[in-house]
Image 1: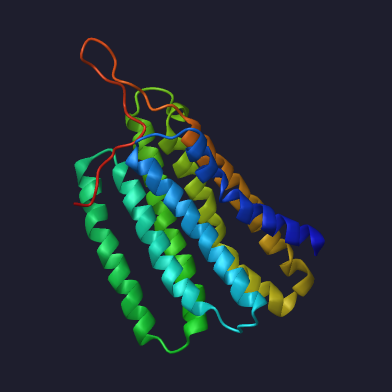
Image 2: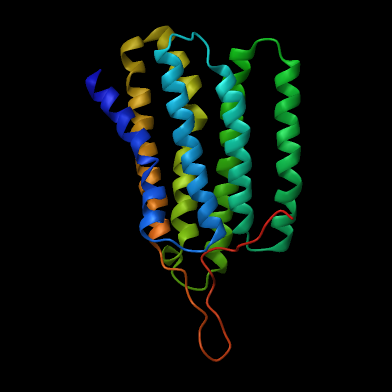
Length: 230
């Protein structure tokens, strides 16, 4: 139990590593600022959830209903900046509001909120995982050089690992708690380790240098595309 507790504490603390890197190496890149905000939202959620549990509240589902769409929209916003083509950016502009409306509508219509939460968390993670992997693949193919030089490579890789952990966490934990409680403790421990590695990868991305314009009028691919939804 002590090992599990410390693994969870380290995972939560690791969410502050990317913001710390951004403070040490500040840039004017707006996409990196969004990544820092994404990490701070995760940290705030975990702190509120922990405080809610300590205060004795039996249910903190309201936190999830605020956190999940916020996290999802921030992820859409970040990955939108890094799309390699105009068509994929346009697709994300339509997908983001449709996704939000669908989640809100289903939340209002469903009766069993706890069961619904287990389903939507995995569904949200699956959508965001596919988007992160798609961004990673298309940007890597169009980079023209070693993709590991760019922030999007490490941050999209970190996102992919993070969302993989989210997809199966609740269903697997729920299944093991019903049949093998001892083995169930390994699930949050494994997720804490993968989340910590994901944050390290995101922090690595923020350490990457944003390429400057080359001479002779040509330019190297920028690490971020500072676009917006407007």
